[in-house]
Length: 295
View (cartoon, rainbow, N blue to C red):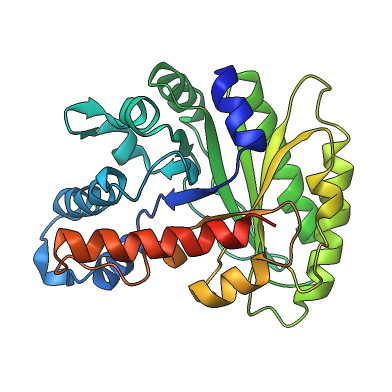
């Protein structure tokens, strides 16, 4: 493990940029960026367009390690290059930003009020490749939609079971059991989730740490015990469909949590903007998220 990256991720100010849209979320991300679906005729062309969008963000002067802790990448982005350098190497060596890889294969169909992660048969090989490419950690997402104790337990069981494999491969997992922001019993779900998270954190081996990526809660500082747990390197927040302003307002009330935003980061950016307009908008977005994270 890169000790310098670990120290930065654990204690530096800033936030994690989530640049890992994939599959079904990619057309939506491109449309928000001003690229319509008739601009590509294959998945390869679509992922090339989104790589250019991510590269424009990453190479912007506004995007740097002074305000950004890390960046979560989709595997195609990890395997690509930016300005002639492998993406992970460019992020760390040129920008001082810690590279993280999305490793899940998407969500299973809803059952028992939750969506578990689909099986990941190629995980071992992917982790080996990621480590060789200089990736620090991973991220994997599942979703909780209703207040089902057994469903929530299954979500956290799965996340920590795979998280342990990732730890054993020498990487730091970001465990993301997202709570649907439209869930009717969101506050109750979050209480159950916190209890499961605390119980599972107790099982993490003493010399290892995980990160948590959590939906902004209804009760302020609900996850403070998770933030302060010795097996937790960092707790980050997902925007989950909230606007950037709403996300920032909620985040500012959560002591010790920092942002890991995707849509809230890229809101307002478009392909049609000049580089000056693009960089100014990105700079404002980044600063507003940093300000909300430093609480």
